[in-house]
Length: 194
Image (cartoon, rainbow, N blue to C red; front, side, top):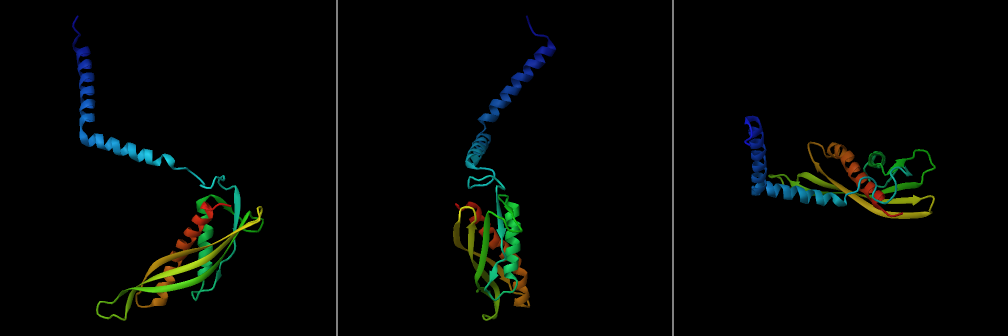
């Protein structure tokens, strides 16, 4: 018994479909793409979503006290404190406590602020065009319930392009420097062992 026209078209369609699928797999570019996708997905197998220290998200509270500023840059301590509070909130590992009663109390001391010349003018070797600005802070985190204290130092740096006025150029770079330092402090705090 021979198949009629509609059944034959249907069978030819499936045959052609499977031939195209086999041809596609034989294509070396598509095979390498499938291999690359498999490797990339396998590389993400160790990724964990949420806090990394084994604690539950938002299980502990953190109080950030205002940072003391021993550098000659005004308001840098306030900028770092504000940036650290925002970074702790966006990270989600800890909840931010504003009025005492926190599980962890974080204090900081901005110790050093340095400026290093990177680029000079093409016609004038005394005129600096770009500075690398560094700040270092001593961070103290005290776990109130366990009675332990951890002390470490974090540093951050940013580039300052000098325009017509060095002071205003540095003032514009201070929030970027504060956010960089806050990110380093948050990473140390979240990934640390208590």
